[in-house]
Length: 148
Image (cartoon, rainbow, N blue to C red):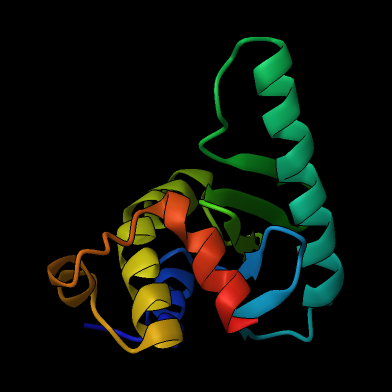
């Protein structure tokens, strides 16, 4: 099984992105891979707020929980996906295709969740399940709080 850094690096490379990172729900970066000196701390804070607003909008408008939040800028694309109380962000550039970014983001979520479990607590999801703990995305909040 891959580490969190390895999963992020694979996602970033396959999506032709400038950066990939995982942050807590309040915007604290847990791990990141970046090429171009992008201000990831600022992006993480705004991404957390963006997901929060999108979740409230989905609730109020009865749309459900957002699977991803996308921001398109002149030369950059931000694609954000909630992962329990954490979030995953890809920062695309002019070469990045939205479809490939989305595929990489969605297909990487299970590996990211497993890597977070392993990197924070030193166990695989399978080992945790045999000990009576199932590392579902809903339990990630407690994991992040305990690690912080």
